[in-house]
Length: 132
Image (cartoon, rainbow, N blue to C red; front, side, top):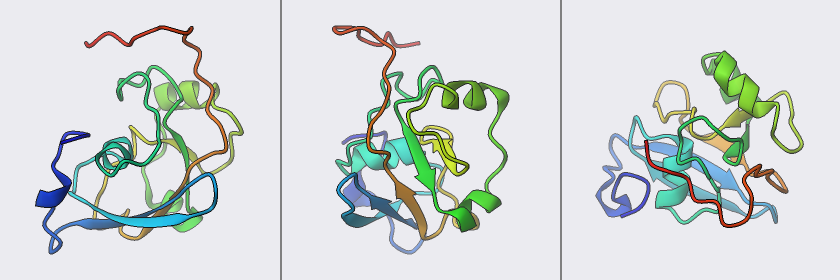
């Protein structure tokens, strides 16, 4: 089990469908339980989205691009998220942190999430995030 839930136990009747676009342009559709973050969904489905701070809103390594239709439905990023996004590589108008976008059938159904070409990790080599 990765990312806080077991992929094999996601109920298709209540799941949220998301499409990830990898750095090479390949697309993969996955099902996520409502309430799971994009970061958790990526980890549970072995999609390479880093998340160095383990979703504690202390880095920008889970930076993603959200399709414009979905982006307009999401709550505005918090000041803390915007502060971390300022550190992200190749920031765009539709940039969000994967740890802050949560699966919800009303707003994120069929959301397309594109991984940026690179991430910027401010931690030094050998750094291991400490649990809170």
